[in-house]
Length: 187
Image (cartoon, rainbow, N blue to C red):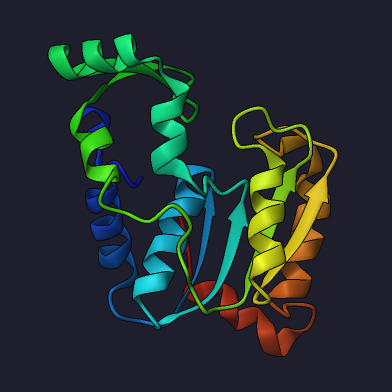
């Protein structure tokens, strides 16, 4: 995982380092969901070795939307206390997240400008990252293919349809392309 087993100390910078260690200077296809999609896009904007991106409900505009999500009083409390309980979808429970996460995120751009081809998969009913964010991004970036689904943030009810889009995007429909899966990194 991108938190390297320590969710409380998580930072955007630390997640980018984790991706760098996983990729290890080899060509890669990055796949990420929500914050992981944003991290994959940030990494690709900085590393030409990324060949393609698959971004599911990517949390573009993350730094500003995160601060807008919490009232000023909550942000002040978070800063004062040092941690704040955040729901972790992977673990299905709230975990403490350090305020350094908020501060570190301010160092990064809202919408990474990567040049690689990207497949953006997003649910029209996503309450966490509105689909309009991906629609606006894809409209301004010719290298981004957007596919919208009648789904929410997790996209779990459209896995088969997403997989078909991914197979087509990665050109994995025949034997000679199936070796590309071994070079992929998922975040």
